[in-house]
Length: 452
Ligand code: URA
Image (cartoon, rainbow, N blue to C red; front, side):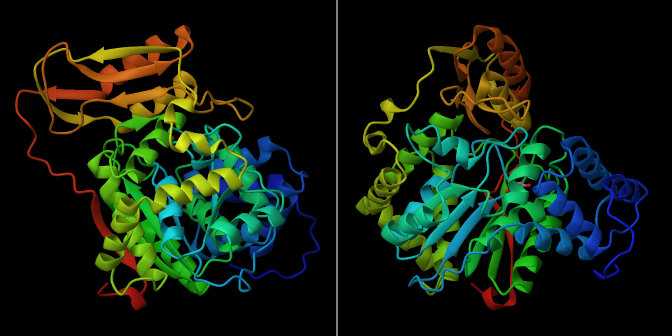
């Protein structure tokens, strides 16, 4: 890759699209110009959409990926949090269905003494997004300006916002465009998107939750491992402590899918209840956050610390505080019935006796989107109340006529297609499958964490 040297040829987006279409390697300068011109509104969406599709199809070299990540990082401010006492640690997931751990982790890690300056995204493709979930809480403001974000962080130890005009603005625009142009599934674009906003946060350490399975963007474990390595390497190059856990997304995480429903399930976990898989994954990820943030000597000790914080109610109290400081109705933490509720519910019944042997997880995510839980076009608004409650997951016995899932919906016109999708996504057989689905398939970490 040639370095950025002043070019005599003016930048034209069409040349960048053609270069990538023809599998040529971009120069660093070409990438910087593309990102800065798009962020400033000087290139239309349709040209950038074409370029994104060319990247999905032709890939990028490591040097191009590094240049893209850095150009997106420097599209806005890079926070300097050195004046705030405490170690700054964050977690980010590559995206899944029912994947809601951030709403548990940020308050628990903050209650355990870490600072968590979390910049998240909206729903992407068939997956849900933390910002859309937070906005299900009446009044919650995910668009805090920088001084306000820092005020909340200083006061309660965690703050959760989206990319803004000030922080990671390139990702804000590219993310929204990728969501509706089928250009999410590229490890290079995912790496640049995640790492640019995480590096802009001014963190010391980052725990990545890289999903693999039928509901993940990286369906195969080797692709997930490739993405994890790319991100860990990028973070380490920038001096951050890094770990990536490869975790299961062959079925939704927890039992609830949909924005308000997922907030409710996180509150259940913070109350010491909730589904076991969600609780266990939160403890694993938080164990790593405490370890990387030097708040525990080992991951296991960090896990125990997280469990104690939940049991004592301090995690729930921290969520209450953050919601209040970000303008939300904190009463939802004690009374989740105050969250938006759908007008109608309808069960999807099992067509036969047997055991659940597979759930097409991506289809479950698409069904939730179709109900109004996600976007088909950039300007679409989200219905926070809709979604799904899964009564049956892998290995569980069902009898004919028993509910597999309850659909929460508002628009009658959308429910039939979502129902069909859910019916098709469940596989039920006479015998339980012998396949095992570990929650955590493995982890990839920097040398300083080996043996954790
Ligand atoms: N999460 C992000 O922030 N970006 C992606 O591209 C995928 C998941």
